[in-house]
Image 1 (tube, rainbow, N blue to C red):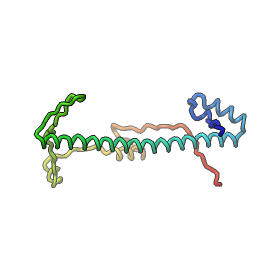
Image 2: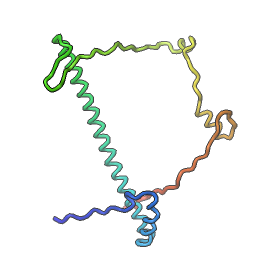
Image 3: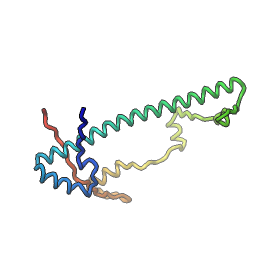
Image 4: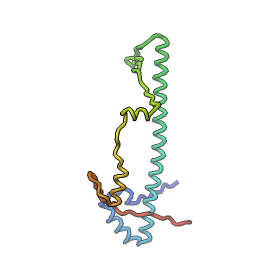
Length: 163
C-alpha cells in the first residue's frame, strides 16, 4: 500500500501579512476560477477542522463533568462511611490523611412577595442601555452618551456549486 501525501494549502496557516503574496502567486498559476476553488477548498478544510474541534471540545467537556461528578460522589460517600464509623480523620500509607470536613451552614432566602419588598425600599435603579442606544441611533442627543461608528474588515462568502 502506497501512502499519498496530503495536500495542505499555504493559506491554511499563513499569517495575514503573507496572504496577499500567496493569493497573487496562486492567481498567476491557476487564473480566477482556480483561485476561487483554492480559497473555497482552504476555507472548507478549516470548517471541517473547526467542526472536529467542536466535537472534541464537547467530548472533553462531558468527560470533565463526569469526572468531577465521580470525584464528588467518592468524597461524599467516603465522608458518610467515615462518619458512620465514628472516624473524622484517617491516616494512609502513601496519602498523608483523609479528614471529614463539615461544611458551614448555608442560607437560602425565599422572597415570596417581591412587590412588598420593593415598596419597603429594597429596590435599585438600573440604566436602560438599550433605550440610550435606540435614541442615539435615531439621532437624538443624549447627555452623558455618544455613538461611535465602527468599521469591520471586508470578508468573503463562499457559495458551493450544486452537484
